[in-house]
Every structure is written in C-alpha cells, then in structure tokens.
Amino acid sequence: MPLNDTSKTLISIKKLVGKAHTSNDKAVANESLPTNITMASNTIVGQSIPSTTGSNAQYEILQNSDSENIAELVRFDVTFIPGSDSGAGRHGFELKLPANYESNSSNSKSGTYPFKNGQSINITSGSLQLIPPSFSPGYEAKPYHTSGGTTQIPVLDARDWNLDYFNGVFFQQDPPASSAQNPAYVDAFLYIGKMLNEVVAAGSSDAGDITAVTAGTGLTGGGTSGAVTLNVARPFSRSKLIQKVLVQQDANTIFTITGSDISVGRYNPNYVDLFLNGQLLQSGSTSDVISGDADYTVASTSSVKFSFDIESDDNVTLIVFPS
Image: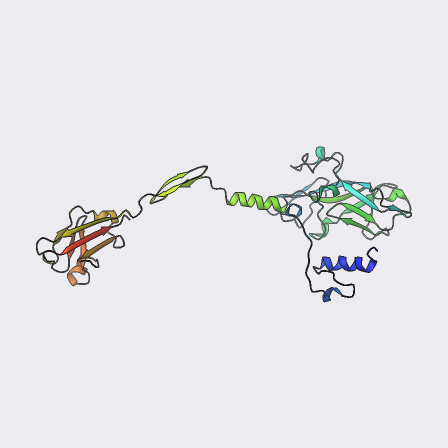
C-alpha cells in the first residue's frame, strides 16, 4: 500500500526541521529522534554569495567581497519533461544552459563540463546549481512565456509555479489554458564559484605546501624536495677538563685551566659550569668575587679567579657547552 498524503506530508516536514518521522500521531515537537539531509561536499556552495545582483544584464558575472567570480545571470532554455503532463496540461519542465552558452559567456569554466552548450541542470547531480533567493531577494528567478510577445510569469501567477534551484526543475500546479503560455525560458543566476570540496582541497594545499627545509643553529641537512633529513650537528658537544691544583693559591688570583676555551660558551653562566672537588660553584663579576657574593669569576678564555684560597690536591672541573 503506498504512503498516504498524511505520511508524505509529515515525513517531508519533519525531515526539513531535522526530526525523524516515527508516527503519524506525533507532531514535529513530539518527535525525539534527530535526522538531517545528507549532502556531498562537491554539491555544497563553498564561497560567499554576493548580497547584490548587479545590473541584471545577461551573462553578467557577479563577484563577492574577495573578488571571486561567483554568479552569472543566464537565460535558461526550458524543455518539457516527458511523462509530467496530465489532462490539465504540462506540469514539469527542465532548465538547460542555452545552446550558445559557450560563445556568449565570459565564465572561465565555460566549455568544460558541466558548463557546456545545452547542458541540462538536473542530470549534473548538483555540479550546476541556481542561486536561490534565500541569499537575497534579487536572486528570485524570472520565468517567461512567449505567447503574444515576451511576458514574465509573476510569482503569484494562477498557475502556482515552483522552481527547484538545486536541480533546475520548474513545476506548475495548474497549467495555463493555452499551451503557448507554458514557460519558454527562465532568467536565473548560475553558481560558478567553487564547491566546498574544492575550497578545502585548495586550503589544504596552500597551508601544507613546504617548498624548502633549511637547517638552523645546531642542525645540518635540509633540502627543497623529496624526503628531507635534519641532523643534530653537535649533540652533547660539551668540553670537560679536570685539573689538579699543584700548589696552594690565594683568593682573587689567576688560576689557569690548561686547554680550556670558555669563549665557546660565550662566558654565559648558563653554558659554563665550574666544580671544586665535585661541588658546583656560583659565578659572578669581579666585584662579586671580592665581596664574597660569588665563588669565582671568569678572567679569560682559559682562566678564572676564586673568592677563596684553593689548596694543593684540590680538583677543579670545568664543563663548557657551546652556546
């Protein structure tokens, strides 16, 4: 048994508001299960639609605020859909790109599928779409018949017509008495911008397009294409020297650590560690050493001054990290 009118109406309404239809006895507000309309990213408009519709000149291309080509005003040919008639007349019609579209359009996509001469909108599965008036009233399509001249069919015409902007199907509930007044063509805005999948792909490509990898401080390697390897140039490349004190030495006198180069650490206490008999010492300025506020100060690239006497057989250990 086919669906009755009540089921058809409730299924449609509930689907549009995001509710699953579980019972004809339940109103929309009583349904608890969610649903939605499944759409592919290649049929979803991916760029912003201009709010104004220009001068309404044929084949005029509209741009959005990012200067992107988005819409084109086209006079679509209208063809009767076989099998959609009744005793009252013809009801269903399909919109097609004009037979001379490619020669008249300045759309950069003109000539490539689906922007081809005579292309039917409905068989492109959403690749061709009309911009609906939900974006702006100016996008309202204008159908015409050619009985006795070119005459626009008004929105509130007695035929009670409807246009599906997604698939370009024109429906008239009550066909006119004269078949000559059936729609001959429709003026509407064709979406010529990118679909969502194109925008996402372009964004991913732009964001992830690394053209070269250059080794920075402490690294070697790099490259401009293919697999690139970076190596740590100096992993743990510290220098460590241990020197035994041979004779007692007074405070604030030069003590040389043979073979050392404190300049590698740029004399920075964060890169230079000095130990006496295994105990880490605190560095400072010459005045800090004289006042006793620091254990030692660096005197040159290979010498230090202690704030205290050092004794014979003491062990001095110097560790320097490259800065």
